[in-house]
Image 1: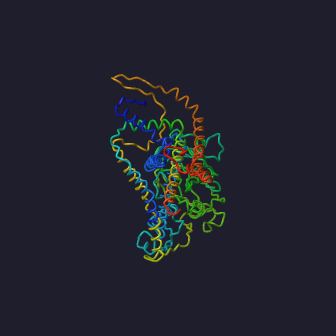
Image 2 (image 1 turned 180 degrees about the vertical axis):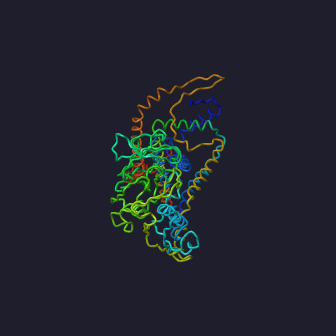
Image 3 (image 1 turned 90 degrees about the vertical axis):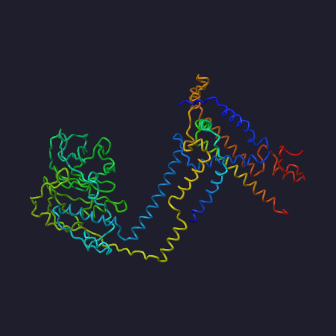
Length: 81
Length: 512
C-alpha cells in the first residue's frame, strides 16, 4: 500500500499533465504523421539516443531553473528579509 | 514508401501558424522566465510524459532502444518470477506437501516400479508425511516425501520428450570396434544420429549390433538442452552442430541440464530412458546418485550381453545392497515402448526379482504447518499489504494513462510506440490537378548523411557540453556566461551601491 501510494503520487503528476492537454480533435492524421516524419528524419540523422539526450538535457535544466526561481520567489515573500 | 503530400489548405495554414509562433519560444527576445521556464518545460514535459506514459518502443536502429527494451523486459521478468517464486514457496511451506509433490511421488513410485520390476513387482517405501496423504489409496501409509523426490520422473512427461527408442546400433567398418553409433527415433520416423554421420533412414541401413560394454558412467556428455525441448518435436536435431554426439562405451549416459539419458537395455527394442527431470535446485547429480545408486563421479562397469541389461556392479559403497557381478534382465521393449517379451534368461544366477532393490530415501522432512491467525502470520500479511504492490498495479496504471492520452488525440490515432522510428528520407511527390511531380530526390542526402553522421553527432555533443556549461553558469552565477548581469553582477555592483542591474528587465539589459 505504501509503495502504491508513492507510485500514485508520482504518476498523478503525469496524469495531471495529460489532463492539461486539449482535445486535439481538429488535427487530422496527415499533419501529425508529417510532424512525426520530420522528427523521424532528425532522428535518422543524429540518432535517437542523442535526440533523447538533448530532450532530457533541456528538460533537466528547465526544471532546475524553474525550481530555483520558485525558491527565490518564495524566499522573497518572506517579510523583513 | 514515398511520402506524398497533397496541397492542403489547412495543412499550409497550420504550418505557417507554427512557424509564426516559433518566435515566442525564443526566450532571448523576451527577457522573461515566462516562456523559458514555464512554456518550454511544459511542452517538453508533455512530450516526455507522452513518451513515458505510452511506454516508448523505439526503433531497432539505435542502442538506446535495445537497452531500453532489455531493461524493461528484464525488470518485468524479474518482478514476475520473483513474485511467483514467493507465492509458490509460501504455498509449499504452508501445505507441507503440495499436490505437486504428491503427484510427483506417485509418478516416481510408478517409475521406479517400471524400472526395477517390470512385471509389477513391489518396491517398498515408508511414508511418514502428513496424515492427509494417507487418505489417498495409491499412496502407501508409510512413505517418505523428501525434497529430492521433487525430481520429476520422466514417466509423467510426454513420451516424446522423455523416452527414446533405440532403433539400431551401427558399426562402421572404418571405425574402431568400440565406437558405436546409435540411431534412435522419437516417435515415428525422426532419427537422431550419434556419431559423425548425418541423418539416416533406417531402411537403408543394415542393422549391425555391436558388442560393446556400455554404461561406464565415469564419463558423460553434456549436450545442452536442445534435445529435450518438447517444442522440437517432429524436427531433426543436430546436437552439436554438424558433429553428433557419440554414445560409446565411455559415454553411455548423456547428461542434460536437468537429467540423464542412459542406455538401459541392449540394441533392438531397447530403450533409452531419461531417468530424472529435476528442478535446478535439487541438481541432477544428486538425483542421479540417489535414485540410481551409482555416482557419476566413480567408475562403474557392467558387462554387456545382447538384449540384456545388467545391473551395475557396484565398485563403491554407494550400492552396498546390490550384489556384485550380478545381472538383472529387463523385458524387451518395442519401438512403441510396449513390453513384447519378458526376460527369460538369468545371467549370473540372479534374476531381477532376487535383487534387493533398495531405494535410498532421505529421512522425512516434517514441516509444521503455520498456525492460522498467529501473530507472525499477521505481521507477514501486514507487511505484504503495506509494502508489496499488487502484481499488475503498474501495468494497469500505465494502461490507464495510455488510454487517457489517446483520448486527447481522437482523430489522429497516434501510435506512440512507433515514435522514434527513424525515417530515411523518401522521395516527395506533389499531386496537383491529377498530375504527380517529384520534387525531392533524397539519394544524395542518404549518402551524404551516412558519411557525415558521426561528425554531426559529435558537433551536437559539443553543443550539448556548451549548453550544460552555460546553464550551470546561469544557475550558480545568476546569468548566462555571455550576459554579465544578474545576481553576480548585482552583487558586484552592490559593492558600489549600484542596484540597477540586480533585476532582469523585460526589455533586456539594465536601466542604464
